[in-house]
Image 1 (spheres, helix red, strand yellow):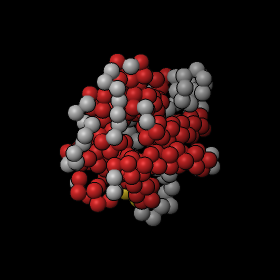
Image 2 (cartoon, helix red, strand yellow; image 1 turned 60 degrees about the horizontal axis):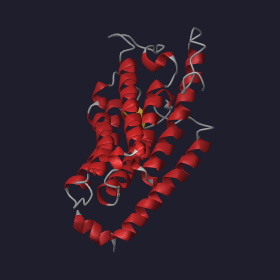
Image 3 (cartoon, one colour; image 1 turned 120 degrees about the horizontal axis):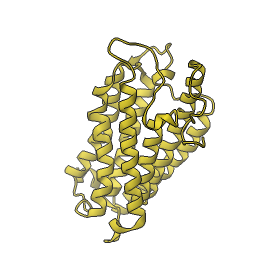
Image 4 (tube, one colour; image 1 turned 90 degrees about the vertical axis):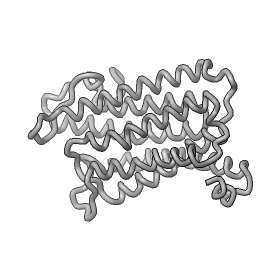
Length: 265
């Protein structure tokens, strides 16, 4: 793959410039997405239109669309001369990303129970995003990110790592609660309870937003920051939509429960 990158870019400075542009473009995408989501929900899951002509099975969609977020980084690390992967700060930040997408692409899809089919256009866009983000994050971290030798003891790295771990655990636990809402043979929706669902409707979304905020704090780059912002925009909108949907669906939905941030919002 080194020969491919040498053919694509005349210098490392040129590729780094592209990576930076991709980061700033993702921030622009986040701003545009924020405006778009004021008028329409992301069309997958319970908000997927039943009129879509082509739809992909939920398990297949999650597996295929998330897989590039694992495979692209894997190829970049294994099949390129990754100059920075021998350094501990880079290894740890890369590990945060790989850990999430190992679970999300290779484990999570096979734990899904039921799930509504995903419209083909949402499925294709998700694949493109995972390729884009996987390349941007891991190419920067494995080849260009330059951290001080003491970075792993810096307060930003420590706080970011703790945030990432807490968010990852909340996300995993919340997904477990959602998967086990229905007993075998049951259908329909139920009110989630337990964990952070006692306080917010979007506990799983709060976990993932926290996770990538920690990743951005530990990584300290426009690339990780852009991903954290994009994630926060999409998932906070989804949490608000879920919150409104639950209140409309269930008369006995807890009135004190917030949408995303306990006690506040």
